[in-house]
Length: 354
Ligand SMILES: Cc1cc2nc3c(=O)[nH]c(=O)nc-3n(C[C@H](O)[C@H](O)[C@H](O)COP(=O)(O)OP(=O)(O)OC[C@H]3O[C@@H](n4cnc5c(N)ncnc54)[C@H](O)[C@@H]3O)c2cc1C
Image (cartoon, rainbow, N blue to C red; front, side):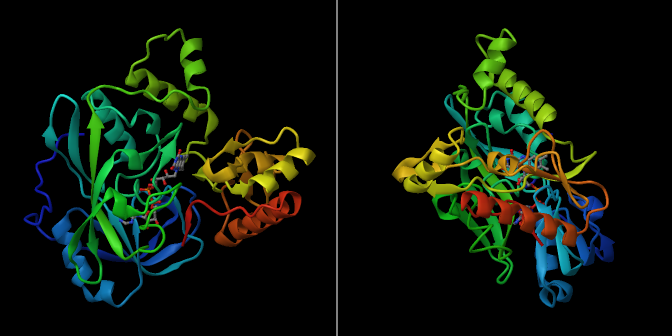
């Protein structure tokens, strides 16, 4: 990844738009469902995006934005236009002894960006290594892993209003960030297209090691004084052993969000299931790992038609190769109904179903 030459909105780049018709989406989302887009357009720069937003094909059809498709499932043929962001560039905006501020174009690959930051001595994103997808999608569901959420490092999100074609900068507080959510995934879904994300990263590492055995993993490798690169390498190693590689097995990572329940509900469940896994939150609520609930329902390693429940992690659904959107819907219903009847907990789906 090279630092970018592009200006803030890169409007001087030529606006070339090529709208294709009847394009297969199977290879364009990691779950790999068979679906077709009526129209499909890849966007290389912001001026092309503005031209597209004004085009009749865009204005007369419904639309959806796509990065690398690792958190989107095309459940059926899409009757409108799928717009794929491929704009590139990383720019240093300011820097001092403490921190660096960067503007990163939406179409950059997330993991490559994380590796770029670490090799340049910019810290904070190490625990988010190897999360698939694009930089532009990172704020959409406020990606998180190993005790870190991306919103802790985002200062602004630059986006274009698809109705007025005006550029708007959302300050961190205006993005409505919460657990696997933001206004871009909820109230403003598909209204704004994110063109760039602004980060403030640290020059001195503040490693977050208290989660999911990171400290133990480093100790067992004899690393007593870890660097951010050590943490990143460990996170990558653990992820590679625990999660299916989307290049080999269709999946979208965690398929359900971890539900939160009240204290009285938790205490009731604890009586029946003394080994229940939980994290105590503020305000007397408890977060229950969705994978544990699914596993305790006996689904782990099993298949519901051509949709599998991953053998190493029940939270991940996999495409056994020939699954359709209908098969995925059937699996969702079967799993959520069983979890509801056993634990009185309603699971909600994490990826975006289109
Ligand atoms: C194996 C695997 C592991 C994963 N692990 C994690 C994890 O640890 N933590 C985690 O949080 N997620 C995880 N995910 C989910 C996924 O990687 C993230 O949500 C990622 O940010 C999605 O990026 P993408 O570019 O593929 O998004 P896409 O699937 O292309 O899009 C996701 C959503 O964002 C919207 N969107 C995309 N780009 C834009 C844009 N430029 N402007 C406006 N809206 C946009 C889309 O419309 C869609 O609603 C995992 C997925 C897989 C397959």
